[in-house]
Image (tube, rainbow, N blue to C red; front, side, top):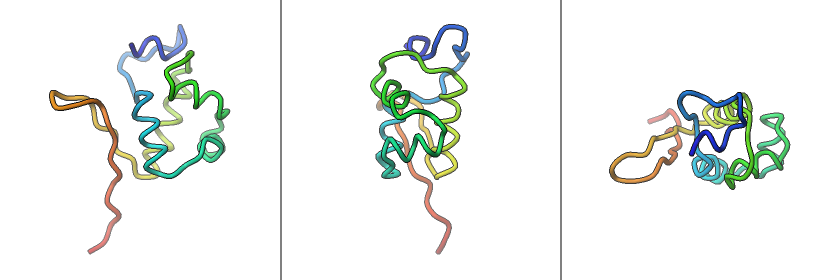
Length: 95
């Protein structure tokens, strides 16, 4: 499935984030497509295509998305026997 999301020649050996995780991360952070596009340098249409699982996304762009989410506190959790891959937000430091 992951190979279908990345464009040929740019397929990663191990998946970074899934389309579902990208949607969840953007929602958790309250980012619009325009906000995320500005933060990553990607066109909002590219982000939408990835989030919907339609069309290829270069591995470098996928990595850029993940980096921006992680810098803003998103933690990506892999799928396990209990459920699908998901996301969490890091707790802010404090008491």
